Length: 243
Image (cartoon, rainbow, N blue to C red; front, side):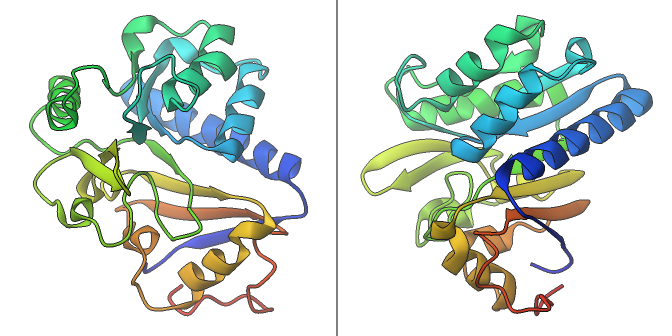
């Protein structure tokens, strides 16, 4: 990573409120400029809290919002581990967003490569031939340093000419946006909470790039939102080596 901003919050609810503020600011700017707001969603427990809070936030311009997925487990959409199911239950069922503006990753062809190609074709229909420039991308970080479904020492890390590819967690295939798409975003926000993430947060923010999450370098703004537990091992004052 090169330039990034870091914000640390005493507890999760304050972090979630800040995330809502970022969503609102980015959506207002995008709709003012282009008439629509495009955002890629993340899975995980912290984004789930964000989506539940967004569902209860008045004034979100859902009619002008287009939702995409940053990654997805290769399971049916009603599977308990499906990111789409989580978003549907916490957010989509509570809001008035047009169904034609919701783009979950397909996972039912029985062929992950085929479904990855289908999702890329969908993106090309919407954004054209140029790599998508999403207004906002939400990401998390795993304890191994992965983000989206870009795992350490996997082929997906090297994909440069596709927008969507197959990531592997062990023997489990997943679909994921690639670095070219993530790094074309106007803003990327990492949401990271919990003491179990403190070691990888320290490694990600204070060492030379070697983790998948460290290869996220968007053309726009890069922001890390941490709670105090996730930030506990950062040096104080926290001056990341690569900031």
